[in-house]
Amino acid sequence: FYYTNCTHFGASVSASSETRQGYYVLQCEGPGLPLAGVHSVTSHKMVRVLYDTRVQHAEMLSQLALPTRKSFE
Image 1 (spheres, rainbow, N blue to C red):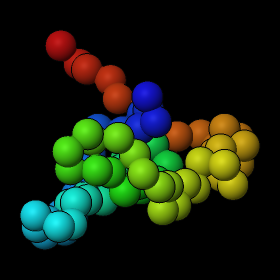
Image 2 (cartoon, rainbow, N blue to C red):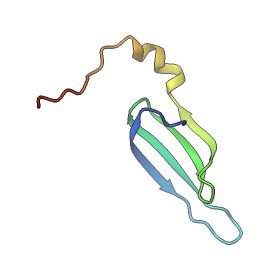
Image 3 (cartoon, one colour):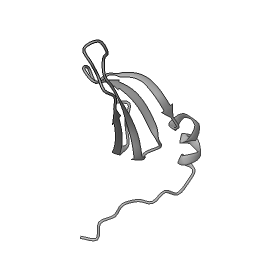
Image 4 (cartoon, rainbow, N blue to C red):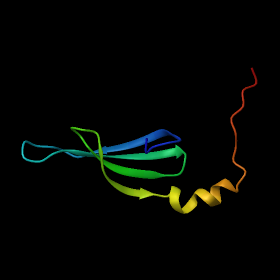
């Protein structure tokens, strides 16, 4: 699954017609590193990766102390 560690998403949809297939852009907005891809409306398969910052920043992020979620129940 390409969108691992993503629970917040944004989406933009293009208009489709009888002669042109529709597409949508799915953007991972966190808590993982940002990435986005173009998907086909009919098959929901990824057609193209628009950007993927995980490659450049994953090593740097692994060295940082990130917040963790805890429950006080």
